[in-house]
Image (cartoon, rainbow, N blue to C red):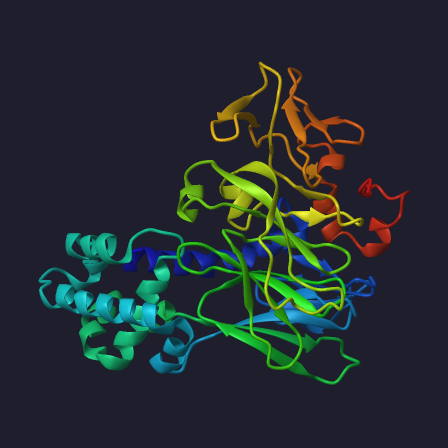
Length: 426
């Protein structure tokens, strides 16, 4: 990513931030999250995250809150902080990324020293773009390297960057990487302030999923090249453990032992431009005592899926597990045998047809079985769940989007059959 593009992105974020609360078309779960007991919620606003009670009264700030713990008194928070020094950041990225940063910084210094054009246009120059394409690249989260270089040179060779930032009239601090701190904290006004830091990461924590028993957190981190799903226990001195790669969303089984998630093994940056093959996968990460296992068994693929940008880049792929722990659902299509004439392609490896992912939405899957999704001539989507009734509907059918609505709905409404918000059949 060029320097000029980074500046433009920063400007747009600043000027558009005030519109966040006015986006009526946004998914409600993106800005409101109710506690399990339904007494409080945190609401993401344009300038902060706020704690409210069930009447809507603002009780104070819930800064950086991402998810509630089952006790409805604590939240999981992700705080982004600027590293004080290069060494602080380097301790988190490890030797391989340190070496890549220092080598790339050295090559950028050479480009700057031989540049004789307008410094205000350096980010759009042919010299810089060539360096960016050859050294930084355009893979998933490739911009981490540019930011790491800025931090490194600010401390080791600050004068080399002075002409660029003086000409652009911006501060170098907007290009400095952040350290992301995962913690749990008390959030209710009646409780004393208390926070427990669990781990720190050099890459953004994309999403967080507490286990139903509250003992373990699953979370996705935007590591370079491919996002990674991790788990960490809330016990003292725990370290995060890697579960799988190519994952941004996950859900727990109700016994807090298994995770189910959508994943892909293709280069993750390809999802920005085209549909790619993936799977709905489950894996056991905790024992019957609720503690993280010392070693994980190989995960099991439940069904094949087609993933696109909206399904995988924090936009639309939200798997969830059924109450019995034997079902999973997500709003993408599955690999399955289908009749001729259906809107589909062919997966040569499995010799099964693949239904397109739109407009057909969520589906259910059972271990060892596949679920059919057909687009009918009427435009409706037919879901064939083994051992269950068929469901036929369109993209606006509430039954096919009930999991999204329940996430954003007050718990009392989600559990009320008389509510306009439907409950999952399982």
